[in-house]
Image (cartoon, rainbow, N blue to C red; front, top):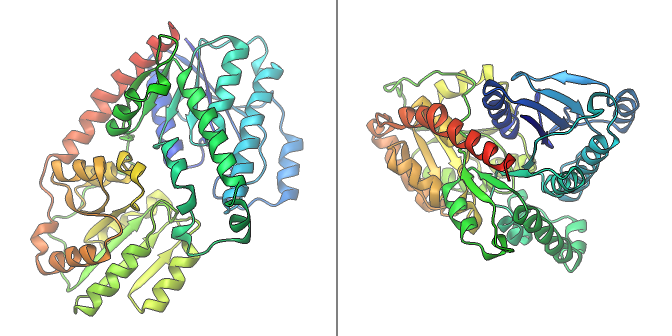
Length: 432
């Protein structure tokens, strides 16, 4: 079967969407399918000058084909450089979606006479869903949507998106009075339309799958998309496991490695470290990653006078030192209701490594951590509760030793559950 994937992000970038689709592409290729990808050149979380972008744009042709690590063919499409603000990201995502449509419909070079059996669009970015629907309609082929987060429900939280950045820009103050509501309403309608007409939807959370299955707007005209949960249990970048008895110091070393963004609101963790410090327990906190809240977190840590550092995103091969240093790893989300249907992919990686998790999460993520004995959980946006947990862990280090069946469960999901579910969804969708 010929499968066309439209995506905002792809290898050699190394974020969660890229790693998820390197893994899913390998499942498809190993099953004998031919995978062709339309994606922009690597630019996610990179600062690209307009002159550099223009030179790249002029030098790229549709005849250029890269080969991905899973044997997929990658055709690079147009884009406009992203920036840190929501407006800049929206422009970037919209231009990537338009670039994918243009690349496919021109039917030149590597895509001459190409007709896929199935089209898959990966979300986020949200405009990719619309691009997938348009391409599928023109080619008259069925399509799937890989819905990685709780969209479109997260659009309801748009007035809180900048809460974790510590500032409200003039642009946001201007737009949120009316234009933001219009854009949010339009985006929701377009996304729901794309989901409604899809042959199938893959999600990363069973909670989200249950909610979508009950959503009437997706059940019209006597048909509805098949919805399947494919968890983010892609292979870890290292298969190390932690030393169960490595804590040899007072206090507590806490590591957060991931996005320093809006949905995390890590200010809550800094406040918790301050409360614990006032109770006589030293919390050494390292936040490692990139995101729009980086500057605000650095400033807040300095103002609170706590032992916390905000460090750049690190290559995977250099993360071993960070995990060896840590006593517990922080998995942290804010209290937006749709995030109860999200499971940060870091949860599975930490479970596989037997790393104790300090979970500031609710819903399915909290349930998984507790069910598999992978750590401790407190409610989001309650720094007092998080501080109390850390004080308890510092005084009772045996609680940091994880001996549950989490690693075996993650491996079973990766090797046995996900491939069968995904291939079954693809094959059934292509037949619709």
